[in-house]
Length: 186
Image (cartoon, rainbow, N blue to C red; front, side, top):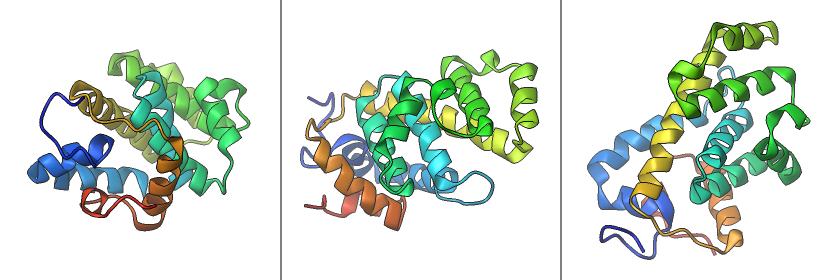
């Protein structure tokens, strides 16, 4: 049960965004800027970073939500998403993404855990400064989003099918205020 009075028909962060439209707008703009650009990292890679950090933070709602969005971008490859959750080193992903997920995992613990060696390894694997920047910012933002959802005990649906439907909607239309104003797909 949520710690504050929110719309019980809206799951997860959606109810919190509806509760506070003043903060919802910039959060939606941030999510859109971080996750929906193809400049540098692909949207699937960006969603995998969000999923991995949410998984490390044990934020079920964000982990499942962003894992499903990543799966949409990966044309249904949920096994790859699960591999990343278990540990990027063993996942069937490019070395560059492995090194970026390593950096994201360090940011999840605290920004000062990221070392010059981590950044050097990412660059050696082909990551650009923009890729590293975006990885750190996505990881940091998802620590905030995860703590927002769990800190207010947002409603977290147990029906995994509902996440798949919403993920397709986000993959097609993006983030923004429609997230909490558009009815849940059925």
